[in-house]
Image (cartoon, helix red, strand yellow):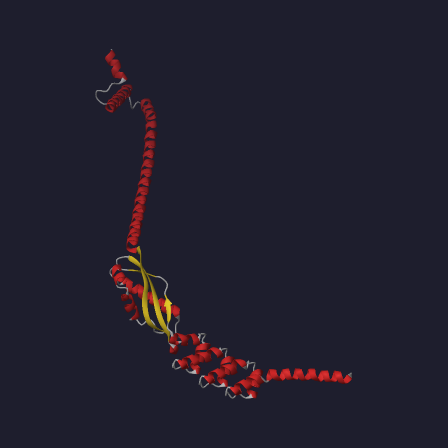
Length: 334
């Protein structure tokens, strides 16, 4: 019984030891590399385990590159993996570039991958150009008519400028700026509608791909639509603004006139109050003059007759000649 337990313990110990050994020594990968003609030392694979590098992500791309005829070694692939790059994608890009006879060294491919760009997609775009469709660009001709233009830009990746070059957004922005400039320099919108290829030639001649990661092959106008009459709308808005300014100035003058009128009314009322006040002082002054003997009784009656006569004349002037008054009717009846 003791011998059975000892044998079982030794078997378990052997299995655990073998598992640990196979984990640190990937014999399967070593055999696959040897069968593919790629010489990778067993201690090199163990060192990858110790450096926390998955051997499969280095050995399999190395086998693929060797079969494609590329001169790539283990240290290059391992260094790129430790730098945070995608080893498999870089090797695929190198193979695609090699097949398309595009000069692409490993160092440049690794730099492009570490820069955050898809190097495999860039190589594929170099072989098969990509078509970028711009959004609708609104431009206004000199006669004030708005045109809505949509263009298709055919670009090819420029591998030499992938590191540090501008992306698709810059190309679209520059093409849109060129469309606006070309349409804005046209005298009539009908000229653009009749010759839309003029936009393509003008924009393409500006060298819009300078400093970008792409090479513009062609710019094709996909659609041109007539929009609003911007010139007429601007003139209408200007006229409306001038009308409002004139109305504001007229309202200002009216307010000043009303204020002046109120000021004159207040002044008139003040003068009338002074006249009434002065008239109220007349009887008192006359009484004082009578008491002091500076005015006689006959003078007083004469003044009253003059006032009565003046009042009668004012009444006749207000009624007018030929008009009947109660006093005149009474005289006639007598």
